Image 1 (spheres, one colour):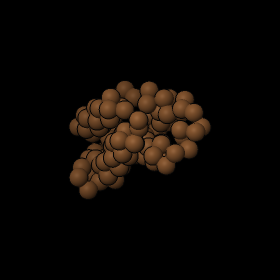
Image 2 (cartoon, one colour; image 1 turned 45 degrees about the horizontal axis):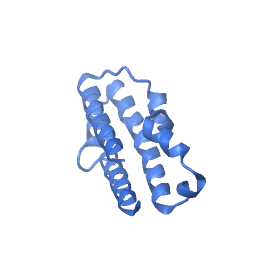
Image 3 (cartoon, rainbow, N blue to C red; image 1 turned 90 degrees about the vertical axis):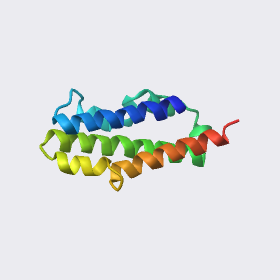
Image 4 (cartoon, helix red, strand yellow; image 1 turned 135 degrees about the horizontal axis):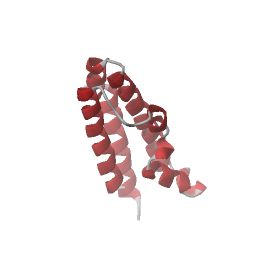
Length: 114
């Protein structure tokens, strides 16, 4: 799970780069689908018992929100709305908040694992 936190941190950096250049090679619709990343695939492959725990459900929902907002940031960045996209990933922005929530949910879940 620590690797997943790291890989999603890298994504945040890639979004910053897209905002700076107004360009991306990613498909925005694919980015929106949280199952298109290795962590999302892993989450979907967990047993129903694990997926039904409060900790796992929080991580899944936060991960879905991360991908939805990341795709929105990317759309803004490539649509000439760089300032708005930038405000979303900075300290008070919704993407920044969702990233923090997802990271915290992942860390909370890790602490509960045997």
